[in-house]
Image 1 (tube, rainbow, N blue to C red):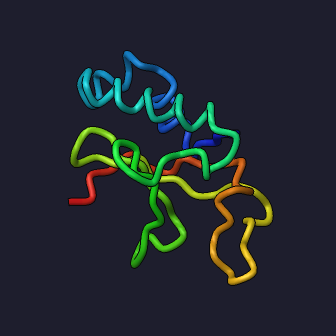
Image 2 (image 1 turned 45 degrees about the horizontal axis):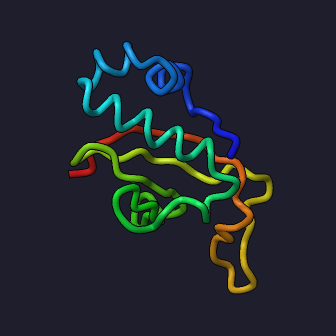
Image 3 (image 1 turned 180 degrees about the vertical axis):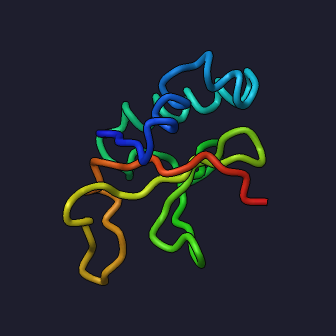
Length: 111
């Protein structure tokens, strides 16, 4: 999958392990790198497991339209589909098989 980043700072956090280690510690930085490698290696979003450990899932409420994967508890990596237009199924839901581009928007503790 193609991966874009919302901000330059977020791109630096995600692409520079020493920087992410300083920000989050070594275990969290390692998990962040692992999830990014999984996302990059995937052909489409459907290739990412919806069960633990990554647990890729759609968000609701304030984060409707966003997705997340688990990092080191309680952190999550939040992203949105970046295909233009966003692929939808006939019933209007996200077509996971056709999402081939994402934009990383945040590393966050939702709790």
